Image (tube, rainbow, N blue to C red; front, side, top):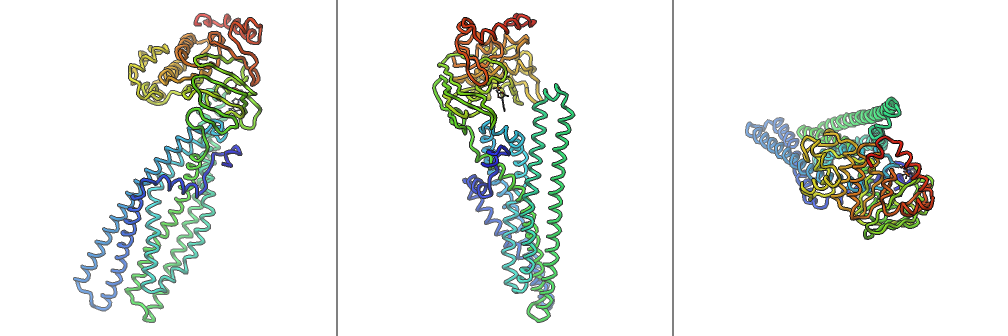
Length: 590
Ligand SMILES: Nc1ncnc2c1ncn2[C@@H]1O[C@H](COP(=O)(O)OP(=O)(O)OP(=O)(O)O)[C@@H](O)[C@H]1O
């Protein structure tokens, strides 16, 4: 896991780790794989009948013993063997394609599942584009190449072995002539195996970086517009795209040089076999028919040898992608729910109560963001966390939610915990799809009840097709407040034991603020709640308030207790009250 630990890309598996993992995934498909091999061997053997029959025909013609019957019989044999050989190859390819698509689907599922469980800081450290590129570009690269690579590799290996055997059986010097040229192929292969992975890896990395630049530009759309960074982002994407173009050009250059070396090997082989045939016939050690068969066998053999080389070319690309995909599946991640993650600290399940004990947290190697934080929330209690910007409130929420593993200390929380932040994602699909994400068995009646409870029943009247309305990318665009209502209704349907609202209703100043506050009250009712409060009116109605400053809890108590103590909170409250009074509409909606 060195690459991840050093703060760079996500883990890339070694060849043997990938082979082990892929072999494990073929469990359940082994008999189909055996069928691919058997059918492939049969097809290859049958295909060799054609050159032997042509050689035989040449000798019969030269000897003057070839009549129409012989020609027709040999032609029929060749026709049948060509048809059977082609049919066997087709069956092998279909079988292999099926098996590898199934294995690839299983690997992709594991990849996505694991990717979602990776600690957020690990993904962020590597750049989200890396994970996206592995689940898209790499999967596509393997999907495109695997169905041709595997049967071609099998057929090529079998043809080489069987044809060499046939050449040796004919006259050993023919096989020897081919063997003399083999080092050219060996050297080509060695050069390519050294050069290929380097250029392919560089190309994939460039693609990852391009994906990262595009994702960042899209994610930070508001910031890009707000700060007038469009030109800068455009340049960054252009530079990343140019690097992809340069790397792709390098890859193509290496491929062209590879082709040139293959052509050289082909020329040398044909020349050697011709010269050997000439001397053998001249000395009476071979017939013209045998030389014809040898030449045809060599021609047949060259094709799969070239194919083998080309397959190795694709194989390089497939292996580079597979290593990256398998790498993610081998990384340690959060297991779903409240389990210890890869930090020094610990997260363990508990009934509806929360206990945070001496928790410390830092982002990567940065400064301590949470410093020996201790906090208890009884089952059913609602606690608000307030404090200045950067005090560590969101980080504490994320550590309790299990998004970040604590660097030190221990967190105990309920198994079913849901966190809602200000950034709510609306998935592309129907409103119903978005709501049933966390409650697949919910009926339309349940969905309507949840929307009503969160004050969002009006939403159904505003969208064109009710629950069937397509929302998210490409669909009906929901406002931020509507997206928040949707998220709160989704939380209600998920019915967690602990709900964490990280400024989930922070639409301060908007006419929806009061509505969202009421929705938050509805979703917190009857369950344990942690509220990262943006507006102090949200904190005031909670059972307890915790004040944070520079990663530490500095005050704790009820709203009245903290006001009476003339504490930091009371100053915050006074400042907020005067600000609220000044803000038009602020009071009216509370
Ligand atoms: N992903 C991150 N990587 C590095 N540092 C981070 C990251 N997220 C937050 N921080 C830093 O951690 C500290 C605490 O941030 P956090 O967001 O938890 O504070 P907060 O009290 O929730 O602030 P706000 O009210 O502005 O959201 C800040 O100094 C912030 O810059």
